Length: 117
Image 1 (cartoon, rainbow, N blue to C red):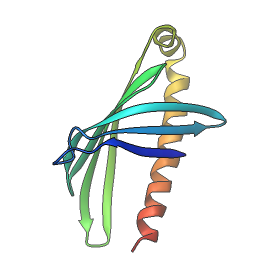
Image 2: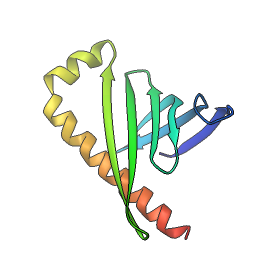
Image 3: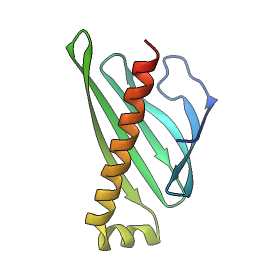
Image 4: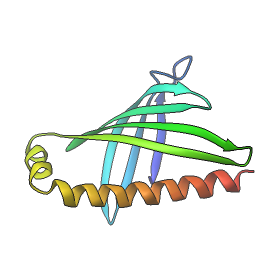
């Protein structure tokens, strides 16, 4: 993620809208987002809407010890137009690329969280 801005903040957080811009290997994409679940410290969910596809993301946080938390991410990518067919044709390759991107994202999140202690 290279840009992130809140568009409209709602009481209770759920329903808050935002804009995010990502860059993956030089491929810049913009998404409009809405927070769908906000239950700290247990869960956070968002729905991202882009031109080519939408993404539903849910993060579960599980305390393992006072110093350790397990983060589990569940995602669903929904192609639009031509991208529906692309996802069907190269689903396995796209899945691997998505897993690599998620792994990088979670490593960045971990580094950020550990740097704010």
